[in-house]
Image (cartoon, rainbow, N blue to C red; front, side, top):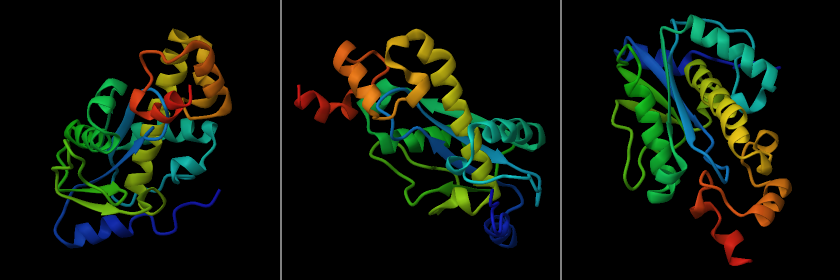
Length: 210
């Protein structure tokens, strides 16, 4: 598995600009048809090397689990937050993503001087990143801090979907597809209809075809 090429370059740019504490923030679960969107924020010890750390989407589930344990054991501070499906429907997914990331940053036990945010957006209609920050496109593949946050967010969401939502609503097979729009998921929606965890704003096209 290829690791991050320059894992501390972005953090070092902020350090050289006067920041002494930098966190990375990322979210997981923006695309699925159900469940909450998760976010994490992580402050790592400066220039810490974590073997295998990479964008969580490029890691196997087993490696993500191993990295999750190592990150929470070695981080200066870490925090995970989520925004529920109902609020996603009441606002919009971009606002929910921003709220989740800012909530994760707010949950850190050490206040960062600056945050590295994965992506190119920092505001939705109803929520925004209010902490001092810099948006980084593809940050989960460029920054150790963001990559660590991506792992915590992804593992936290997958655990919740698998260990909680799949047991509450076993008919949908959530543990298999994690809520994404697979054929199995749509087949189960056709058979059982949506459950309270489904994002109804994500099902408008599906409903229009009924």
